[in-house]
Image 1 (cartoon, rainbow, N blue to C red):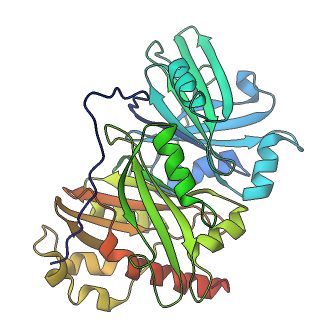
Image 2 (tube, rainbow, N blue to C red):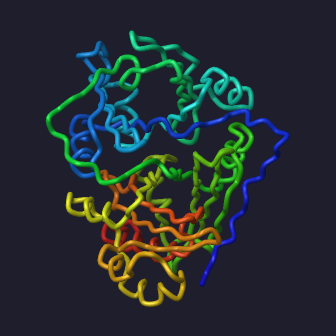
Length: 377
């Protein structure tokens, strides 16, 4: 049975966590058509309609829809005019994650602590208010055109943020059992991984949880390197990938080419029952990467006893891996955009704190098969 030895976060009880994070507040995607994207996430992924902002709420430059499932909030935003900052982002990157918003108790302090350590300001602290209270937001730039926004909402009881109104359409497909954001993976350029690892350590107080090199993550053709950074309480985790030399173009290089630079590669969302979730997603048209039947031939020998029947996992293509703390089940969608960039991971943890090292080879060979079909390998 293969186990993964995790590098424990380095902690010092005498050192104050200067950037305490309560979790992920929301993810904002800039998309070509926010209304259609909201419909897609409702229909395919079971997100529920919550709030809306746009012309009807006093905005003149953008239209946004908030959908939510469990603790996962997605904001889909499109521009209302040409030659806009949002439109230029879409021209450069296609549909993609612009904002990774983090929930904090003090957005001004979060801004001050990160900018004094070298973060480039994105949004000066601003108090936004309506008749249900106020929110304070601030923000910093990270890799590429992606930003972190710090959200303080202790004194707010509104639907989402000031400027949003409840959105109550009659169309409400059932959810599929998604609970929260487990982690988000960023792809950065050649030799930039250590730079951004240092950023998260020095500027945001994160610690390295685990690392993988090109010996861990490689196939006959492609390779990459990755390091996982985690905040103090472990609620926010950011694996950071960079390309490594291989015989052909890696998935990271393909992403960088089509996204036009660094950005969020995939969003991992947690479920308590991956079999039921994947069955529901598949029935709604979500397409997943598949692995060869041979993956399952010696799976029991590699991972030991699990609660699920392998014959149940096999037709769905669900992967399994074990570490010293337990095991996890995971599966990856195909890209959800026209460009081969953003995709989702569905993950169920049964004690495991790792990220599926034992599945890397099978996963990346599946990605390579898709690259070959696209002619980009």
